[in-house]
Image (cartoon, rainbow, N blue to C red):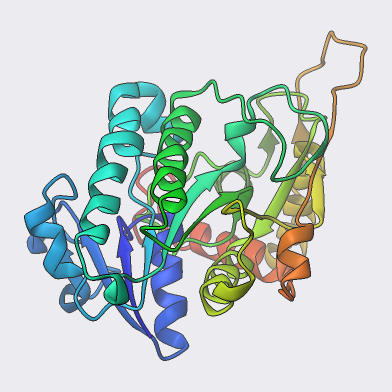
Length: 323
Protein backbone atom coordinates (compact mmCIF):
# COMPACT_ATOMS: atom_id res chain seq x y z
CA UNK A 1 0.00 0.00 0.00
CA UNK A 2 0.96 3.61 -0.50
CA UNK A 3 0.21 5.89 2.45
CA UNK A 4 0.01 9.67 2.66
CA UNK A 5 0.63 11.10 6.14
CA UNK A 6 -0.59 14.68 6.44
CA UNK A 7 1.66 16.41 8.96
CA UNK A 8 3.59 13.21 9.54
CA UNK A 9 6.87 14.61 10.89
CA UNK A 10 5.86 14.65 14.57
CA UNK A 11 5.88 12.22 17.49
CA UNK A 12 3.25 9.81 16.21
CA UNK A 13 3.70 10.46 12.51
CA UNK A 14 7.41 9.72 12.48
CA UNK A 15 6.93 6.44 14.35
CA UNK A 16 4.05 5.58 12.01
CA UNK A 17 6.17 6.28 8.94
CA UNK A 18 9.02 4.11 10.26
CA UNK A 19 6.65 1.26 11.08
CA UNK A 20 4.83 1.35 7.74
CA UNK A 21 8.13 1.25 5.86
CA UNK A 22 9.25 -1.71 7.96
CA UNK A 23 6.10 -3.53 6.81
CA UNK A 24 6.86 -2.88 3.14
CA UNK A 25 4.45 0.02 2.58
CA UNK A 26 5.24 3.11 0.56
CA UNK A 27 5.06 6.37 2.54
CA UNK A 28 4.74 10.02 1.59
CA UNK A 29 4.71 12.76 4.23
CA UNK A 30 3.41 16.29 3.82
CA UNK A 31 4.92 19.23 5.66
CA UNK A 32 4.91 23.00 5.33
CA UNK A 33 8.69 22.98 5.75
CA UNK A 34 11.06 23.27 2.83
CA UNK A 35 13.19 20.24 2.00
CA UNK A 36 16.19 21.89 3.65
CA UNK A 37 14.20 22.16 6.90
CA UNK A 38 12.99 18.55 6.96
CA UNK A 39 13.95 16.79 10.23
CA UNK A 40 16.98 14.57 9.83
CA UNK A 41 15.04 11.44 10.82
CA UNK A 42 12.83 11.81 7.69
CA UNK A 43 14.13 10.75 4.29
CA UNK A 44 14.04 13.76 1.97
CA UNK A 45 12.65 11.72 -0.92
CA UNK A 46 9.57 10.84 1.16
CA UNK A 47 8.62 14.43 1.89
CA UNK A 48 6.20 16.59 -0.03
CA UNK A 49 6.33 20.30 0.80
CA UNK A 50 2.60 21.03 0.79
CA UNK A 51 0.46 23.83 2.17
CA UNK A 52 -2.67 22.00 3.31
CA UNK A 53 -4.62 25.24 2.99
CA UNK A 54 -4.10 25.12 -0.79
CA UNK A 55 -6.10 22.54 -2.76
CA UNK A 56 -3.87 23.04 -5.78
CA UNK A 57 -0.87 21.84 -3.76
CA UNK A 58 -2.64 18.99 -1.97
CA UNK A 59 -4.46 17.47 -4.96
CA UNK A 60 -1.37 16.04 -6.75
CA UNK A 61 -0.18 14.48 -3.47
CA UNK A 62 -3.28 12.25 -3.48
CA UNK A 63 -2.44 10.56 -6.77
CA UNK A 64 -2.01 6.77 -6.47
CA UNK A 65 -2.52 6.89 -2.68
CA UNK A 66 -4.25 3.96 -0.93
CA UNK A 67 -4.79 5.54 2.51
CA UNK A 68 -4.55 9.00 4.08
CA UNK A 69 -3.83 9.66 7.76
CA UNK A 70 -4.52 13.23 8.87
CA UNK A 71 -2.16 14.09 11.74
CA UNK A 72 -1.77 17.75 10.83
CA UNK A 73 -2.39 19.81 13.97
CA UNK A 74 -0.43 21.68 16.62
CA UNK A 75 0.03 19.60 19.77
CA UNK A 76 -1.66 20.47 23.07
CA UNK A 77 1.22 22.66 24.24
CA UNK A 78 1.31 24.76 21.07
CA UNK A 79 -2.50 24.79 20.93
CA UNK A 80 -2.66 26.37 24.38
CA UNK A 81 -0.24 29.07 23.23
CA UNK A 82 -1.85 29.54 19.81
CA UNK A 83 -5.52 28.57 20.13
CA UNK A 84 -6.53 30.09 16.80
CA UNK A 85 -3.98 27.90 15.01
CA UNK A 86 -5.51 24.82 16.66
CA UNK A 87 -9.01 25.85 15.61
CA UNK A 88 -7.90 26.63 12.07
CA UNK A 89 -6.16 23.26 11.72
CA UNK A 90 -9.26 21.46 12.96
CA UNK A 91 -11.86 23.39 10.96
CA UNK A 92 -10.56 25.18 7.88
CA UNK A 93 -7.69 22.83 7.08
CA UNK A 94 -9.78 19.69 7.57
CA UNK A 95 -12.49 21.09 5.31
CA UNK A 96 -9.93 21.73 2.56
CA UNK A 97 -8.52 18.21 2.89
CA UNK A 98 -11.98 16.63 2.65
CA UNK A 99 -13.03 18.88 -0.21
CA UNK A 100 -9.88 18.01 -2.11
CA UNK A 101 -10.60 14.32 -1.62
CA UNK A 102 -14.15 14.72 -2.93
CA UNK A 103 -12.92 16.54 -6.03
CA UNK A 104 -11.48 13.21 -7.15
CA UNK A 105 -13.64 10.67 -9.03
CA UNK A 106 -15.55 8.45 -6.59
CA UNK A 107 -13.52 5.34 -7.32
CA UNK A 108 -10.18 7.06 -6.70
CA UNK A 109 -10.80 8.52 -3.24
CA UNK A 110 -8.54 6.86 -0.66
CA UNK A 111 -9.95 6.22 2.82
CA UNK A 112 -9.14 8.85 5.44
CA UNK A 113 -8.16 8.30 9.07
CA UNK A 114 -8.58 11.50 11.08
CA UNK A 115 -6.46 11.53 14.24
CA UNK A 116 -8.47 12.98 17.10
CA UNK A 117 -8.07 12.64 20.86
CA UNK A 118 -9.85 11.34 23.96
CA UNK A 119 -9.55 14.93 25.25
CA UNK A 120 -12.71 15.73 23.25
CA UNK A 121 -14.61 14.34 26.25
CA UNK A 122 -13.37 17.19 28.43
CA UNK A 123 -11.54 17.27 31.77
CA UNK A 124 -14.34 15.93 33.96
CA UNK A 125 -15.08 12.56 32.40
CA UNK A 126 -15.80 9.61 34.68
CA UNK A 127 -17.30 6.16 34.52
CA UNK A 128 -17.29 4.10 31.33
CA UNK A 129 -16.36 6.20 28.31
CA UNK A 130 -17.11 4.70 24.92
CA UNK A 131 -17.55 6.13 21.44
CA UNK A 132 -21.17 7.08 22.16
CA UNK A 133 -20.22 9.28 25.14
CA UNK A 134 -21.09 12.92 24.45
CA UNK A 135 -17.98 15.05 23.82
CA UNK A 136 -17.45 18.20 25.86
CA UNK A 137 -14.14 19.70 24.67
CA UNK A 138 -12.65 22.63 26.58
CA UNK A 139 -8.94 22.88 25.77
CA UNK A 140 -8.10 24.54 22.39
CA UNK A 141 -6.42 21.32 21.25
CA UNK A 142 -9.54 19.28 21.97
CA UNK A 143 -11.81 21.92 20.44
CA UNK A 144 -9.76 21.94 17.26
CA UNK A 145 -9.80 18.16 16.98
CA UNK A 146 -13.55 18.00 17.58
CA UNK A 147 -14.23 20.64 14.95
CA UNK A 148 -12.32 18.45 12.53
CA UNK A 149 -14.35 15.41 13.59
CA UNK A 150 -17.55 17.31 12.88
CA UNK A 151 -16.39 18.18 9.39
CA UNK A 152 -15.32 14.60 8.69
CA UNK A 153 -18.77 13.42 9.78
CA UNK A 154 -20.43 15.97 7.48
CA UNK A 155 -18.60 14.54 4.47
CA UNK A 156 -19.19 10.95 5.65
CA UNK A 157 -22.93 11.43 5.99
CA UNK A 158 -23.11 12.83 2.50
CA UNK A 159 -21.32 9.60 1.49
CA UNK A 160 -18.56 11.53 -0.23
CA UNK A 161 -15.68 9.92 1.65
CA UNK A 162 -14.84 6.71 3.47
CA UNK A 163 -13.46 8.04 6.75
CA UNK A 164 -13.12 7.28 10.44
CA UNK A 165 -12.25 9.50 13.41
CA UNK A 166 -9.72 7.90 15.75
CA UNK A 167 -9.86 9.15 19.34
CA UNK A 168 -6.41 8.37 20.66
CA UNK A 169 -5.66 8.00 24.37
CA UNK A 170 -2.22 8.63 25.91
CA UNK A 171 0.26 7.14 23.45
CA UNK A 172 3.74 6.68 24.92
CA UNK A 173 7.08 5.35 23.79
CA UNK A 174 10.43 6.28 22.36
CA UNK A 175 10.43 9.01 19.70
CA UNK A 176 12.39 8.23 16.53
CA UNK A 177 14.84 10.93 17.58
CA UNK A 178 15.58 13.07 20.62
CA UNK A 179 14.88 16.03 18.32
CA UNK A 180 11.14 15.27 18.32
CA UNK A 181 9.83 18.02 20.62
CA UNK A 182 7.51 15.96 22.85
CA UNK A 183 9.46 15.80 26.08
CA UNK A 184 6.58 17.29 28.08
CA UNK A 185 4.62 14.02 27.76
CA UNK A 186 4.53 12.23 31.09
CA UNK A 187 6.55 9.10 30.22
CA UNK A 188 9.11 11.09 28.23
CA UNK A 189 9.43 13.76 30.90
CA UNK A 190 9.93 11.20 33.66
CA UNK A 191 12.51 9.27 31.65
CA UNK A 192 14.46 12.46 31.06
CA UNK A 193 14.26 13.35 34.76
CA UNK A 194 15.43 9.86 35.71
CA UNK A 195 18.58 10.22 33.60
CA UNK A 196 19.38 13.90 34.12
CA UNK A 197 18.31 14.46 37.76
CA UNK A 198 18.32 10.94 39.25
CA UNK A 199 14.93 11.68 40.80
CA UNK A 200 11.35 11.99 39.61
CA UNK A 201 9.45 15.13 40.59
CA UNK A 202 5.73 14.93 39.89
CA UNK A 203 3.82 18.11 39.12
CA UNK A 204 0.63 16.81 40.74
CA UNK A 205 -0.27 14.10 43.21
CA UNK A 206 -1.02 12.00 40.15
CA UNK A 207 -3.82 9.90 41.61
CA UNK A 208 -6.29 9.92 38.71
CA UNK A 209 -5.95 6.96 36.38
CA UNK A 210 -5.50 7.57 32.66
CA UNK A 211 -5.60 5.24 29.69
CA UNK A 212 -2.27 4.50 28.00
CA UNK A 213 -1.22 2.74 24.81
CA UNK A 214 2.29 2.07 23.54
CA UNK A 215 3.40 3.83 20.38
CA UNK A 216 4.08 0.44 18.85
CA UNK A 217 0.47 -0.62 19.36
CA UNK A 218 -0.74 2.79 18.19
CA UNK A 219 0.93 2.54 14.80
CA UNK A 220 0.01 -1.14 14.47
CA UNK A 221 -3.60 -0.23 15.20
CA UNK A 222 -3.61 2.43 12.47
CA UNK A 223 -2.37 -0.08 9.91
CA UNK A 224 -4.89 -2.66 11.17
CA UNK A 225 -7.81 -0.23 10.94
CA UNK A 226 -7.02 0.64 7.33
CA UNK A 227 -6.76 -3.05 6.46
CA UNK A 228 -10.17 -3.76 8.04
CA UNK A 229 -12.27 -1.00 6.49
CA UNK A 230 -15.30 -3.27 6.13
CA UNK A 231 -15.50 -3.41 9.95
CA UNK A 232 -15.44 0.35 10.51
CA UNK A 233 -18.25 1.46 12.86
CA UNK A 234 -21.31 2.98 11.27
CA UNK A 235 -20.94 6.21 13.24
CA UNK A 236 -17.34 6.66 12.09
CA UNK A 237 -15.75 6.91 15.55
CA UNK A 238 -13.20 4.51 17.00
CA UNK A 239 -11.18 4.58 20.22
CA UNK A 240 -7.47 3.79 19.99
CA UNK A 241 -6.23 2.92 23.46
CA UNK A 242 -5.63 -0.21 25.51
CA UNK A 243 -6.78 -1.96 28.66
CA UNK A 244 -4.04 -0.18 30.67
CA UNK A 245 -5.30 2.46 33.11
CA UNK A 246 -2.50 3.88 35.28
CA UNK A 247 -2.07 6.83 37.59
CA UNK A 248 0.93 9.14 37.26
CA UNK A 249 2.21 7.55 40.46
CA UNK A 250 2.03 4.18 38.71
CA UNK A 251 3.91 5.56 35.71
CA UNK A 252 6.61 7.08 37.89
CA UNK A 253 7.11 3.79 39.69
CA UNK A 254 7.40 1.97 36.37
CA UNK A 255 10.04 4.41 35.11
CA UNK A 256 11.97 4.17 38.38
CA UNK A 257 11.92 0.36 38.27
CA UNK A 258 13.08 0.23 34.65
CA UNK A 259 15.79 2.77 35.38
CA UNK A 260 17.05 0.50 38.16
CA UNK A 261 17.11 -2.49 35.83
CA UNK A 262 18.73 -0.64 32.92
CA UNK A 263 20.97 1.94 34.57
CA UNK A 264 21.57 0.48 38.01
CA UNK A 265 19.74 3.01 40.20
CA UNK A 266 16.12 3.67 41.12
CA UNK A 267 15.38 7.42 41.23
CA UNK A 268 13.17 8.39 44.19
CA UNK A 269 9.73 9.80 43.49
CA UNK A 270 8.78 13.20 44.89
CA UNK A 271 5.15 14.27 44.64
CA UNK A 272 3.24 17.21 46.12
CA UNK A 273 0.89 16.53 49.00
CA UNK A 274 -2.69 16.92 47.89
CA UNK A 275 -5.05 18.88 50.11
CA UNK A 276 -8.07 17.18 48.56
CA UNK A 277 -9.07 14.25 50.73
CA UNK A 278 -11.65 13.09 48.18
CA UNK A 279 -10.29 10.54 45.71
CA UNK A 280 -10.33 11.73 42.09
CA UNK A 281 -13.01 10.45 39.76
CA UNK A 282 -11.76 7.67 37.48
CA UNK A 283 -12.91 6.71 34.03
CA UNK A 284 -12.67 3.58 31.92
CA UNK A 285 -11.71 4.27 28.30
CA UNK A 286 -13.46 1.56 26.33
CA UNK A 287 -11.61 -0.13 23.47
CA UNK A 288 -14.27 -2.79 22.91
CA UNK A 289 -14.91 -1.70 19.33
CA UNK A 290 -11.27 -2.07 18.36
CA UNK A 291 -11.08 -5.39 20.19
CA UNK A 292 -14.22 -6.64 18.42
CA UNK A 293 -12.59 -5.85 15.08
CA UNK A 294 -9.90 -8.39 15.97
CA UNK A 295 -6.98 -6.15 16.91
CA UNK A 296 -4.49 -7.70 19.33
CA UNK A 297 -2.20 -5.63 21.52
CA UNK A 298 1.49 -6.44 21.98
CA UNK A 299 1.72 -4.23 25.10
CA UNK A 300 5.50 -3.88 24.77
CA UNK A 301 5.63 -1.50 27.75
CA UNK A 302 9.09 -2.53 28.96
CA UNK A 303 10.64 -2.06 25.54
CA UNK A 304 9.15 1.42 25.07
CA UNK A 305 10.27 2.67 28.49
CA UNK A 306 13.79 1.31 28.14
CA UNK A 307 14.15 2.66 24.60
CA UNK A 308 13.14 6.10 25.89
CA UNK A 309 15.64 5.87 28.76
CA UNK A 310 18.36 4.90 26.27
CA UNK A 311 17.62 7.95 24.14
CA UNK A 312 17.82 10.16 27.23
CA UNK A 313 21.16 8.81 28.41
CA UNK A 314 22.74 9.41 25.00
CA UNK A 315 21.83 13.09 24.73
CA UNK A 316 22.39 16.31 26.63
CA UNK A 317 19.33 16.66 28.88
CA UNK A 318 19.09 20.42 28.26
CA UNK A 319 19.45 20.47 24.49
CA UNK A 320 18.36 16.86 23.80
CA UNK A 321 21.26 16.63 21.34
CA UNK A 322 23.68 13.69 21.12
CA UNK A 323 26.63 13.87 23.52
